[in-house]
Amino acid sequence: MVTARHEAMHRIFQEDPGVFARAFKALDIPFPAPVGAAVLSPDVTEIQPLERRVDSLIRFETAEGGSYLLVIEAQTRKDPDKPGAWAYYASHLHQKYKVPVVLLVVCQDAATARWAATPIHFGLPQWQTLTVRPLVVGPNNAPMITSVAEASRDIPLATLSVITHAQDPEVSDMLTMLAAALRTTDEKTARVFAELTELGLGDAPAGQIWSKMMVMDTRFFRSHTSQVFRAQGLAEGVLMILAARDIEVPEEVRLRVEECEDRDLVRTWHARSLKVTRAEDIFEDSVG
Image 1 (cartoon, rainbow, N blue to C red):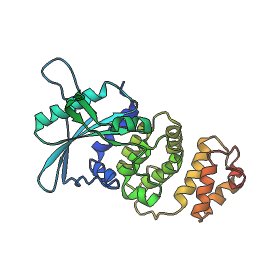
Image 2: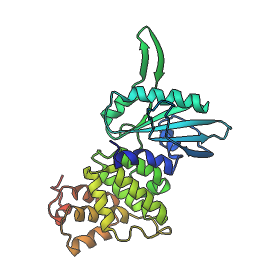
Image 3: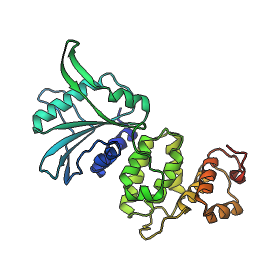
Image 4: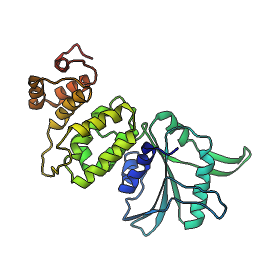
């Protein structure tokens, strides 16, 4: 069954196809930055009444004048039926478009990512007729975006980072950075990537925190293009997490958090805000 979380995991590449090359640049897999990209129909059905549909299909044009297809599949669990489908997609699309095909699988947990990254061999042990080698992005290799400035420079990549690290213990920190970065961009971009983040996180604990952050931050969808980055982004995250956990925040606590300019100290308070039962306890060293 296709879920909203599944949709977000591949739709992000439709919003900004170039995020594909940027995501793998840090892993020394040098895909050329596209000079053009077109989202194609995901339908790969043949004449027989058997519908086959990839999640997303993008055709990239390179500066050297070449082109290739990126087949994007969102995978939330191991599925023994998928390898055969992926082999079909790759061979059919290569035959149809006569250009190289790259299969990208997006995962949110390390076990599924390891499974998806295993080369798939078809044939007999003594003679393998076909091998499919998926390219996988997941929590084990996706870059972690942990600063407001970094997230603001590449919001699509920061969104992909949050979605693929949905189960990481540090994801709440990443959510705060992304929320602060979205306030620095235009309203349309902010809405698109805020929605993709919410869909991609689904009903996981991180998704619940993100949803409440978006509801409670009434300034979120106003354009703040000229706003200067400060530790305030992280400080606001502390207060939003406390509020999302239905913990009352006294005025003196709010002021102390908002006025603190020590970034490392605010990060400590941020980690504690996920565990305390009283807002004042974020200042206590006894809280792990």
